[in-house]
Amino acid sequence: MKKVAKKVKPKAKKVVKAKGVAKPKKDEVAGLKQQMAKVRRESNAKIKALKSKTKEISEELAKKEEELQASKRLVDLKETELNRLKNEMEYKNKQLASKDMEMESYKKTAQEKIFQLEAKAKELEGKVGGTPFMP
Image (cartoon, rainbow, N blue to C red; front, side, top):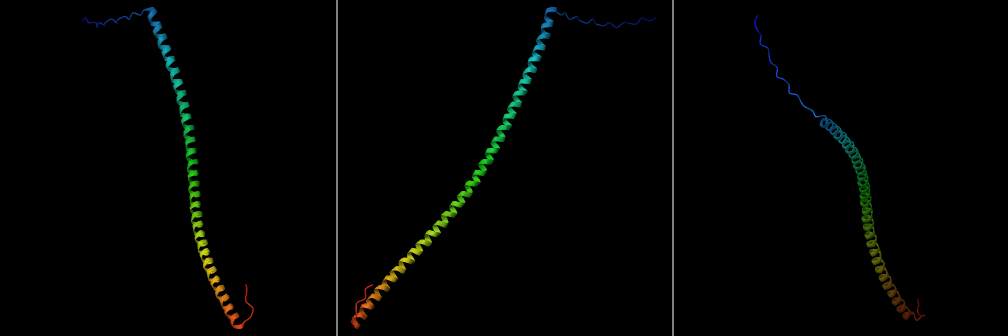
Protein backbone atom coordinates (compact mmCIF):
# COMPACT_ATOMS: atom_id res chain seq x y z
CA MET A 1 0.00 0.00 0.00
CA LYS A 2 0.91 3.38 -0.62
CA LYS A 3 1.67 5.60 2.11
CA VAL A 4 -0.42 8.66 2.04
CA ALA A 5 1.14 11.67 3.44
CA LYS A 6 -0.82 13.10 6.21
CA LYS A 7 -1.48 16.73 6.15
CA VAL A 8 -0.10 18.33 9.16
CA LYS A 9 -2.33 20.83 10.74
CA PRO A 10 -0.59 23.67 12.43
CA LYS A 11 -1.38 23.83 16.02
CA ALA A 12 -3.52 26.67 17.08
CA LYS A 13 -1.90 29.05 19.39
CA LYS A 14 -3.38 29.06 22.73
CA VAL A 15 -4.52 32.39 24.04
CA VAL A 16 -3.61 32.70 27.57
CA LYS A 17 -6.20 34.57 29.50
CA ALA A 18 -5.46 35.87 32.85
CA LYS A 19 -8.28 35.23 35.13
CA GLY A 20 -8.20 38.62 36.84
CA VAL A 21 -7.83 40.74 33.69
CA ALA A 22 -10.53 39.37 31.35
CA LYS A 23 -13.49 39.97 33.59
CA PRO A 24 -12.85 43.64 34.33
CA LYS A 25 -12.66 44.33 30.56
CA LYS A 26 -16.06 42.77 30.08
CA ASP A 27 -17.42 44.78 33.00
CA GLU A 28 -15.77 47.90 31.65
CA VAL A 29 -17.25 47.34 28.17
CA ALA A 30 -20.67 46.67 29.67
CA GLY A 31 -20.39 49.83 31.78
CA LEU A 32 -19.36 51.87 28.76
CA LYS A 33 -22.29 50.45 26.78
CA GLN A 34 -24.66 51.37 29.58
CA GLN A 35 -23.12 54.83 29.81
CA MET A 36 -23.42 55.26 26.04
CA ALA A 37 -27.06 54.14 26.12
CA LYS A 38 -27.73 56.61 28.93
CA VAL A 39 -26.05 59.43 26.98
CA ARG A 40 -28.10 58.53 23.90
CA ARG A 41 -31.33 58.58 25.91
CA GLU A 42 -30.40 61.93 27.44
CA SER A 43 -29.42 63.30 24.04
CA ASN A 44 -32.67 62.10 22.49
CA ALA A 45 -34.64 63.65 25.34
CA LYS A 46 -32.75 66.94 24.90
CA ILE A 47 -33.28 66.83 21.12
CA LYS A 48 -37.01 66.23 21.60
CA ALA A 49 -37.21 69.09 24.09
CA LEU A 50 -35.32 71.41 21.76
CA LYS A 51 -37.47 70.43 18.78
CA SER A 52 -40.59 71.03 20.85
CA LYS A 53 -39.27 74.40 22.01
CA THR A 54 -38.29 75.30 18.43
CA LYS A 55 -41.76 74.37 17.19
CA GLU A 56 -43.38 76.39 19.96
CA ILE A 57 -41.20 79.43 19.22
CA SER A 58 -41.84 79.10 15.48
CA GLU A 59 -45.60 78.99 16.05
CA GLU A 60 -45.39 81.99 18.36
CA LEU A 61 -43.27 83.85 15.81
CA ALA A 62 -45.76 83.05 13.04
CA LYS A 63 -48.60 84.29 15.25
CA LYS A 64 -46.73 87.52 16.01
CA GLU A 65 -45.95 87.96 12.31
CA GLU A 66 -49.63 87.53 11.50
CA GLU A 67 -50.55 90.08 14.18
CA LEU A 68 -47.94 92.45 12.80
CA GLN A 69 -49.34 92.12 9.28
CA ALA A 70 -52.85 92.76 10.60
CA SER A 71 -51.58 95.83 12.44
CA LYS A 72 -49.84 97.06 9.29
CA ARG A 73 -53.05 96.65 7.29
CA LEU A 74 -54.94 98.56 9.98
CA VAL A 75 -52.33 101.34 9.96
CA ASP A 76 -52.58 101.51 6.16
CA LEU A 77 -56.36 101.80 6.40
CA LYS A 78 -56.08 104.51 9.04
CA GLU A 79 -53.54 106.42 6.94
CA THR A 80 -55.82 106.17 3.91
CA GLU A 81 -58.74 107.45 5.98
CA LEU A 82 -56.56 110.24 7.39
CA ASN A 83 -55.50 111.32 3.90
CA ARG A 84 -59.11 111.26 2.74
CA LEU A 85 -60.17 113.40 5.69
CA LYS A 86 -57.27 115.83 5.11
CA ASN A 87 -58.26 116.21 1.48
CA GLU A 88 -61.89 116.67 2.44
CA MET A 89 -60.90 119.27 5.03
CA GLU A 90 -58.79 121.15 2.47
CA TYR A 91 -61.70 121.11 0.02
CA LYS A 92 -64.14 122.38 2.66
CA ASN A 93 -61.68 125.08 3.76
CA LYS A 94 -61.39 126.24 0.15
CA GLN A 95 -65.17 126.25 -0.15
CA LEU A 96 -65.43 128.22 3.09
CA ALA A 97 -62.81 130.72 1.94
CA SER A 98 -64.69 131.10 -1.34
CA LYS A 99 -67.98 131.66 0.51
CA ASP A 100 -66.23 134.12 2.82
CA MET A 101 -64.93 136.08 -0.18
CA GLU A 102 -68.38 135.93 -1.75
CA MET A 103 -69.93 137.28 1.48
CA GLU A 104 -67.36 140.09 1.63
CA SER A 105 -68.10 140.97 -1.97
CA TYR A 106 -71.85 140.88 -1.31
CA LYS A 107 -71.35 143.03 1.82
CA LYS A 108 -69.36 145.62 -0.15
CA THR A 109 -71.95 145.64 -2.93
CA ALA A 110 -74.79 146.00 -0.40
CA GLN A 111 -73.00 148.85 1.41
CA GLU A 112 -72.38 150.63 -1.89
CA LYS A 113 -76.04 150.19 -2.84
CA ILE A 114 -77.14 151.50 0.58
CA PHE A 115 -74.80 154.48 0.24
CA GLN A 116 -76.15 155.23 -3.25
CA LEU A 117 -79.77 154.94 -2.08
CA GLU A 118 -79.12 157.20 0.91
CA ALA A 119 -77.50 159.75 -1.38
CA LYS A 120 -80.45 159.55 -3.76
CA ALA A 121 -82.89 159.90 -0.83
CA LYS A 122 -81.07 163.03 0.36
CA GLU A 123 -81.12 164.41 -3.15
CA LEU A 124 -84.83 163.77 -3.46
CA GLU A 125 -85.45 165.32 -0.02
CA GLY A 126 -83.67 168.40 -1.11
CA LYS A 127 -85.90 168.68 -4.18
CA VAL A 128 -89.11 168.01 -2.28
CA GLY A 129 -88.16 169.85 0.91
CA GLY A 130 -89.55 167.14 3.15
CA THR A 131 -88.39 165.48 6.29
CA PRO A 132 -84.97 163.99 6.21
CA PHE A 133 -84.69 160.22 5.83
CA MET A 134 -82.92 158.53 8.76
CA PRO A 135 -82.30 154.87 8.71
